[in-house]
Structure formats: structure tokens, C-alpha cells
Length: 248
Image (tube, rainbow, N blue to C red; front, side):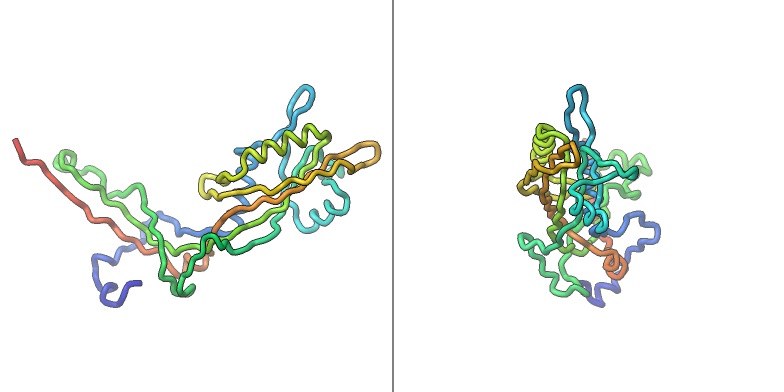
């Protein structure tokens, strides 16, 4: 936290008027989106048939849909047909991650930060022949960001297939990605999958459906948008160093 004397130093008064660096913020929606992205773009779950393989869609279950699924033991599409194979998930629990305790001292006036450095600075462009031959240590803008709150987000997931062999293959695929970092190009979170329970006795008329349930846990973190606005990121520019070899 800077004091009044430091605030009066013009060298530290850096304007962000033309700054394209977005305030760092992350919420529960970003964690949900990272989970869905990893399923659709990385795992790409499929089940095998006699002649081909079928992609397994992952659907988010709203409270109404989840209630219907628990009642009927399967999911239907928009044409009211049973979807096979299929997977659905819903957020089950949000808890503080006790493995990474973080004492901000004061939430309204936090004292603990971390630094994010930008890769490009316009001041590093060559503007003279001298600048090209001199050994310059490039300037970098560093953004001081408030530490987030670390949490564990749990999701219930249900899987359905037609045959037990298909369910085995689907579970093997998911367990292979256990204890890995799931996410997209913006956020990645350590993920673990709990035990799978398998039910062989679900019947719909003459058909039988194989059902399996499990829990997925993501070690995530949150930094609400309100704090990104009320506690704007501080910008600091590194010291530039110039060295010239004058020897002949």
C-alpha cells in the first residue's frame, strides 16, 4: 500500500488511458466454462459401436432438468426421445480450499498482491540506428493484481450408455484425464474425479440403460469484478538498462 508521499512522486503516476490490459477478474461462470471447454475440445468423449464411434454430448442440467433426470433416470432431447449416449452435469458445492489458505488482512483494503507482466511494450521498438546496435534491457509493464480467493468447486455428473462395454470405455477415457489441469486458453484448474458408481438395472420398456454417476472437483479461484473496478490494478514499469561496448 503506497503512502501519500509515494503518491506525489510523478515517476510512479502512470496513466492507463490507452492501456489495453484488461483488469484480471474471474468468477464461477469462468470455471464452469473452462470445464465445458475441456470436455468438448480436449477429452472429446466417444463410445464405440460395432462399425463406428459416437460422440457423447455433455449437457448442463438446470435445477428443473436435474429434478426430471433423477425422477426418470434418463435425459430426453427436444423431441422427447431418450438420449443415448449422453452426459449431464451440475454444480453441486462450492467450498473454500483449505490447502491454499490466503489471509488478505483486509478484504476491503487488501495488502497481498501478485504481479502480471505484459509481453509487449511500445517503448521497446527500434527508433534509431544507435538503438539497434546497443544492448538494451527491454522495458516491461508489470500489473500488480489483488490475490484471489482459492476455492474447490464440485460437480455431479451422470453418464448413460446402451452397453456396459461402452460405459467402461467412457469411464476409462475420463479417468485417464484425472488429476490433470482442465480448462481453456485463459484458465486451467487442477481437477480430480471421484469413484464411479454403475447401475445396470435401469429399464425403459424393452430397452436397458447403463447409468453411472461420479463427482468432479476443480481447484479454482475467484476474483470478483467489483474488486477489479474499486481496486484498480497498479502499473509499474521496469527500469531500463543500456550498455554500450566502446572497445575497438
